[in-house]
Amino acid sequence: MQRDEPASGCLYLVGTPIGHLGDLSPRAKAVLSGVTVIACENTRHSGQLLSTLQAKGRRLSFHQHNTRSRLPQLLQALSDGDSVAVISDAGLPGISDPGEELAAEARCAGFEVICIPGPCAATTALVSSGLPSGRFCFEGFLPVKGKERRQRLEQIATELRTTVLYEAPHRLLTLLQSLAEHCGSERPLQVARELTKRHEQQVGPTIAAALEHFQTTRPQGEFTLVLGGCPVSTPIELDKWELKERLQKLIKAGDSPSDAARHLAQETGISRRHLYSLLHQETSD
Ligand code: SAM
Figure 1 (cartoon, rainbow, N blue to C red):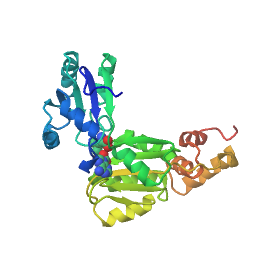
Figure 2: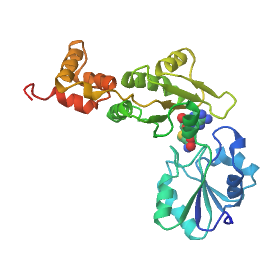
Figure 3: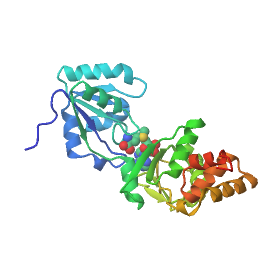
Figure 4: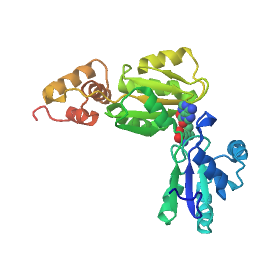
């Protein structure tokens, strides 16, 4: 027999639609209608959905700028016997959205934490991309600039598993250019636009093809990128001397040492760090 929901003292992370309103599950509707407190990323944004459900719970805003002050209040509500639901503007709370810290703290404090599963742009894009979904990793939004962004791009370039990324429309072209630079423009890529909505579209099948498309069509709407993993090549074929020689050739052709290591890493599947270290080893090694 299924348990009675919502239960007192329980935290519910409720998935809501990422576009198509028909994707709100009956269970999500029942929980949202029945809880005594609803923490919304944006109370105005979720207002219409909650009014349609005739949800009576006390609504509180809960977003990245008030997380610290709200956490103790929400834990207190659980302790007072409230049933608490968390929703974001769209999709699953905790996935590039508020929810993660609250789930951790509620669990740590001994409260029950239950996810009412629902749409998530990452998994929706992944399964419709046609790219390998048996092993994948989620990178969400990359840092906008600086060393941290470069490091994440370098890790993504040598990642063997399929990688899923989120990006805002005004930064899509820059991300596509960065991916081309780090992964090579022929790497498989599907860009999922406006998933579950009227103008849902897939653009691919490579970084080059997506770049070409979005250089002539201004990116509008919401985007999730699914990038194929780094192809496994045959590192054993090349010994240290051959690798050093290839690195020197790239440097002679104008690459900086770190670019040479990155380009050869893309070509061979050998780690960039290892290749870079070869450049600093004595030739008599
Ligand atoms: N928690 C959400 C989820 O479970 O998917 C993600 C929230 S994150 C703040 C918003 C990002 O998700 C958007 O910038 C976009 O990259 C992606 N996204 C959300 N809805 C989408 C859609 N309908 N189509 C494509 N991507 C979407």
